[in-house]
Length: 121
Length: 106
Image 1: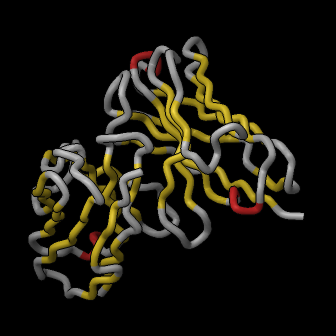
Image 2 (image 1 turned 180 degrees about the vertical axis):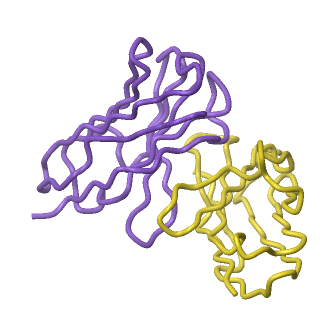
Image 3 (image 1 turned 135 degrees about the horizontal axis):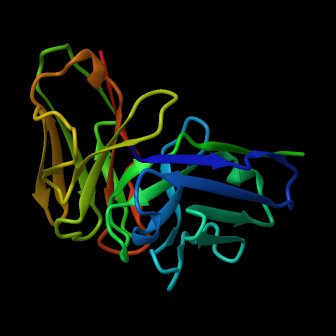
């Protein structure tokens, strides 16, 4: 069965950095696009970042562009999100999610359990 | 970006009833629309993609319809496990955007 397990969350001060990882199993990771989606406490879902199967390009939400970087390691079935210059408004549960397709962003058919990131002084 | 608006924000229904949730896109997204269900403390679950195609394992009581800017998610006979928050999401244009959600409660 498909499993996505996030790690690397925690508490960080404003301006700090954090790197999230997502370990994938149960499917051929190298043939699917992947996303990060976040959810602030008590709020709705916000798409954050996207990378296709071959890392040929990336897409970011305007709210994180220039501060966050998505990457993937197909040899180790792992997705990453490097988060720099963190702000209080980045506080959220961050979900790793699998796209139904390999190249373009579509619907997200499997999600991890989420990693909590708290940005506070 | 394409703004997705869901209504109502909260829906109070009884088990066994039929209910319909609405999602409106700020501009046409063709049929590039998905629905998700999220229960407290859990990750979202894909229910519908392509506006009307049920995802794997989703019960037949869930159905989606619509195209362009107007979409609906119908639940034919609410079960206790269906009480949750439902989100729509468009994937016609970047950035991908979600609606604000509809909470279905007793």
